Image (cartoon, rainbow, N blue to C red; front, side, top):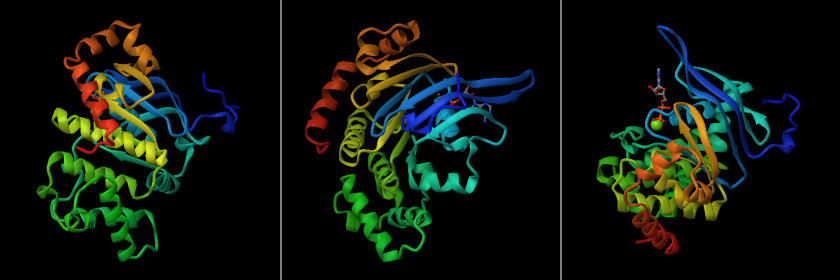
Length: 287
Ligand SMILES: Nc1ncnc2c1ncn2[C@@H]1O[C@H](COP(=O)(O)OP(=O)(O)O)[C@@H](O)[C@H]1O
Ligand SMILES: [Mg+2]
């Protein structure tokens, strides 16, 4: 499946081939991600969908080279033709800070309660941009908060995480991710902890960011409704394997695999949510 002669310039922006992640168990190694291929064009949007435990988070961590110590990984992860799995950790860290950013389900566990959100955005930015003054970092942080539509950003930047709602905290995390102007944003269940209205607002924001910055997006979710409006292609995962892939429309209109059908059936308010997303995206995400 993987060709060692694959010409880098022929590759997509993100090209994952034969990715396998396994953990040791009492009875031997178990693959939790198995022979997975993913493709993403520059500025494209890919949804990875599957129920809890299907291997979505480990896939994203494997792409970023952030797997737990016990895990082993094989396969290749090419970004712009460069294999991240063959990169020394120091360079990989630079890729993570410079070109790729991640946001997660629970912003509260990623934010330190004892520091203002501004201090944390500035610190994250300065850790990736040597030589930036505090003043410059402050300006970048305020701008990033404005871009995610946090009102009165210059004032809110001095507030602590607990002074923000769940949705606003996720906006703070997205602001933090945007400071380095990533070419790829990996969002792992970014709306799962939020109620439906706030979910729709955050998805509209991600959509708007894609449109305005051209960043590519990998959106990971257990909820097919979430990916329907803002990704072009979907990969459906089950027990570590891709069971179905294709353009969003064909997955929705003509799911081939019974598991995909079951995921579709598990979406109770799909028409409502798509309607809500449509109205939000057409207003640029502003309430
Ligand atoms: N540190 C670990 N050690 C052993 N197994 C793990 C570990 N982390 C995750 N797993 C297993 O790998 C599978 C996939 O996990 P994960 O990628 O987190 O799923 P998802 O994000 O789709 O819910 C699960 O069955 C989980 O139990
Ligand atoms: Mg997960």
